[in-house]
Length: 360
RNA sequence: UGGGCCGUCGUCAAGCGGUAAGACACAGCACUUUGACUGCUGCAUUCAUAGGUUCAAAUCCUAUCGGCCCAG
Image 1 (tube, protein in one colour):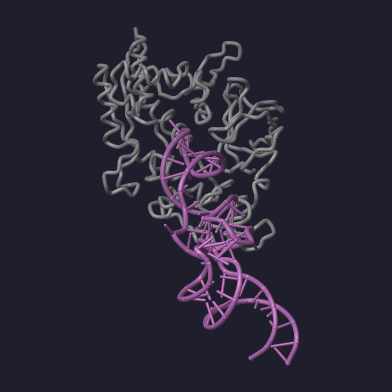
Image 2: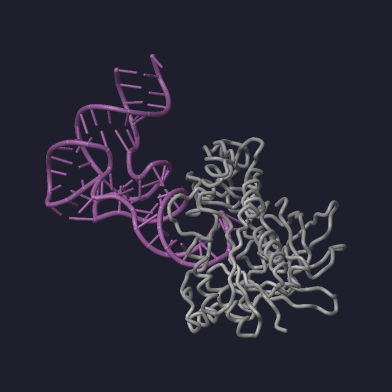
């Protein structure tokens, strides 16, 4: 009997091609599009087109219809609000810089959607992510591996996947190049073949996340002082949530050299500014860890690591600390290590694991 | 009130008679399934104001306004 797979279809090219590929390969495919929020809930009253819009749902449905398989729309709005949007707001309220995409993958796609899929008697789910999975008989563990198209590799946002989730997930695009996917979409005559890649935070309009936090989520954010490394006041900031470590644009202050956000202090409501060289650090601590290629980190391990999505990995030594946190020591100083963001570890193409940065 | 200095883009700042450098800020675009970084492009027909000298002035002269310093 054919394996039943539910494909998470965003309405974009990638997931559409993923579905088409699985169908071709003989899987019994159905599609699912997630309704994650209503426009009114995120402060949009006009017909602005963003992620999860009606058009996206219809794109997905039309692709499914064309390929001849079932298509579901799941309303995960309340979960999305609780697990992703609220987390996002809380993170900023605490001076961190969260990554909502990772939370969405972790708490929605690979948990809630997977559960729903299994409930509907599917064997697994599939997404259009560029990544690969592989069962390693030697260790008895499921591995998450980088995509063939390294320029599109998305393992960074998938590091939180559990063994159970990996065992029930297919990434049909892992062995393809983005350019090949576009061509396949054209050949299949998919309506979204030329649709631009998604970007920016899906639930925030026009990239104005600070406005979203203040106006929709009502995160308090008072004006305060910009200070230099010595504590001298340099000017006024618009509220700490407007800034993240390493940020240069939007400070509105002019100096001989460009200045960057070096630190944020919620207690004093100050934002510390400094030159480029003040941003580098050689170590960080991380918590909320998830391990993939290993069961647990019990002793120091040499890995490569990256602290943001589009970044070249550098070698680092990770070692366990007390209470479930770890210390990451880089060979080369890293720029703008930011609390709240994820640090992901690799061993060649394998994702070793990752966690949330606690301190830079 | 005498004496001296200075007023060039939002900020800092070149220019010193030949037809407005640069940096920072800012904006747009590119990059990007987070926030950032980065890259590219744009950004003073005008040099405090008003006259004058000159073929030609931000650059010289005069006056006015504004700021600074020393002397009182």
